[in-house]
Length: 236
Ligand code: 5GP
Image (cartoon, rainbow, N blue to C red; front, side, top):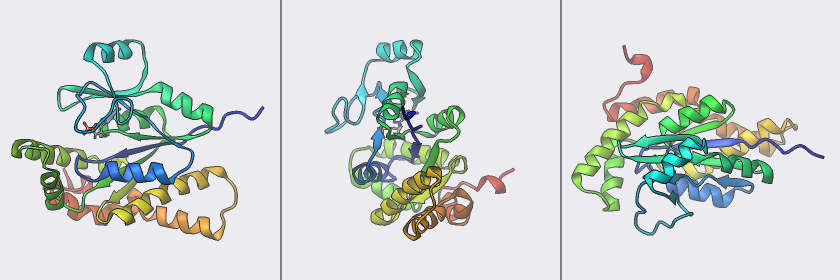
């Protein structure tokens, strides 16, 4: 019997308003054998969200019972109130199907996953600058000024953690970012498959390489600057 292939776990994190959900949706549509981990949360559904689609919406009591039953691979309490967590069963199910798994989680969750699964591939999506992020948040028309300011503040804190990620994407043009994200996913599959790379594969790997943390620091510095944050290397 062929042993089940170990799934590649991809983590995507981004501040709210970076366009991450669209990128993730396009990636899932375009990529075969990639499952999405539908997180559990205690927050209420927003807009057209459906239970079991974007999230499993559960009560605090239910969430705390799942913690006690050790059902989470990681979980975090965000914004000082709501719980969000990744259930272990999604990883088991992906493995049984021979698929990879995509997690859309915050920086705390990403750190927990990297500790448990060091081979996980993490991608941080950055907005091009603070002004664009503010404009995108206002355009959504979902939030009050106070919430927008809070989100911008949270974005700054999250962005400070960019250098804990393997790849950095700057989401300026959706189509370009989408192609780049797909290249990262494919390239990691190719690198792990251990088969010789075709000329086409080499191109994919080259594109993905451009977004590796080490190759992105210069491009990230002005974005951090727009949020009033210095790169870690320049901090005390
Ligand atoms: P929202 O409430 O806007 O859907 O999500 C808020 C944040 O929670 C986003 O940054 C999202 O990536 C993160 N998130 C969603 N699911 C999980 C999860 O299972 N674990 C963790 N740690 N964060 C999550």
